[in-house]
Amino acid sequence: MKSGLERSFLSLTARRKAQTEPSPLLIELLGKADEGGGWTRGYPFRYRVTSVNSAPFYEVGLGLPLDSCMLLRKAVKEISVALDPREVEPLTFRRLIEVLTQHAAERLASYGARLRIRELAELAAYEAIGLSRILAIAKDERVTEFFVDSDASPVYLDHAVAGRCESGIVLTARERDALATHVDTFSGYTLDFKTPSLKNDLAIGGAILRISLDLEPVSVNRFALDVRRLNISTLSLAELVRLEVISGEAAAVLVGWLETGGNVTVVGETGTGKTTLLNALDEQVERRLRRLYIEDAVETRDLLERGYHQMKVKVDPFERGEESGRTKESEIVKALHRSPDIVILSEIQSEEHSRAFFQALASGARGIQTFHASGIEQAIRRWTGMHHIAAENILDLGLMVQMSRPDRLKQSRYVQRICEVVPEGGSPKLKELFLRDRGGRLRNVAGSGWPLPPEGVDPARFHERVARATERLGGRSDG
Image (cartoon, rainbow, N blue to C red; front, side, top):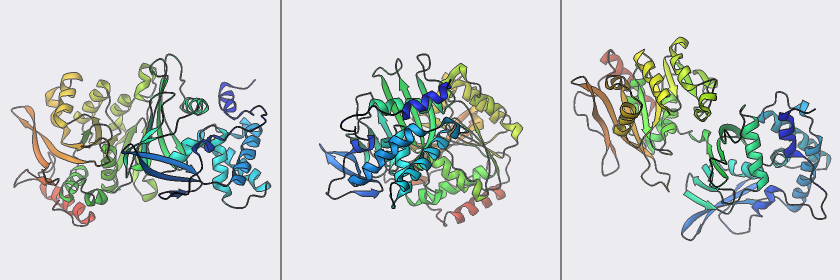
């Protein structure tokens, strides 16, 4: 008898009943790219953004000739029925795609195909498991995140150039079932009536996608999807300075602060660039420092091959609640036992996370973390009022960075302000250090005598680190 795991992915690749006219491949539902202009190539796909009703409209077209589609259909049919579950060991999503792609390449070569076999074989593999149109979107690096609101709603997305775009892509029942099956099967958890929400990251077409899925009864409209590209945050700190996301002076101060044992918290609403800044700072900080990452979805860069010291711990998603066996709060508490120089948290989400985080700060842990809040003051109010963190513990935060995205339909994001948490009469007070003026420039507003180093750090050592960071950033220290 086949295991549940075997049945779950074999059901997606089962042979369809013979038909007089073969049903279209999922990928063919994208339609053929017309002869008009504006298309960018990404074989076997083409992409463009046009305007419909004065709003950006995203299109994906198929750039394959008819004979290639016929070969593709034949390969998909054969690999769907020939797959032996024993070949997929260990059973991972990546291994499943590798096996199907290899079989498809062999079939295509036997049919006489000669050109672009690797790309066609990959497409056949994703078609066999019902995710070929997800692959098409994942292949476009300009798509940073895409969404579906119901089982009948079209995909809409955030585009790195055009901002928020509509589309005419409506996921089929097979695609929705395939997403649910693979997120379920390869997360180690189970989607059911009791747990209708799940989050997992999958590597699709060279992109690392964090897939958040909600089904009934939590989703009133039966199906909701949020897919975020995790490896989009590839901008360096120098590039963020060039793009005026942050000033050169502010960037150098943050790096110097982290390298001398200070703590930095990045706050902002969803999609404001918190993770982008975190990754850029992480990459710029001295590579010999030992980093400990605690994440539920891995959004930090892999820097091991570049000589950085990284230990990454993956915990269960926050949504798992009491069923979770590997919680973020338990790993935060254990952080000091791993002797890190810097602790990097993907996001502080709950009261339990907050209490563990501040306990770690009180024990001497320092690093970079993100927190969802509209502003610095709101973040502190949530910690003290809702998460019951004592006011004196707020003093351990160090520097706080507020990210902003003024127009949610566009892609512009930047550092709005940077503050230091300082004591005043035993209570925490915010000291403004950098503030974006009306002209859009991030200015040093702290006055003379600043920047000061983290508590207990020799000022000369701190300023030496800031100077070194300024040099690495290309000498851009005037903002």
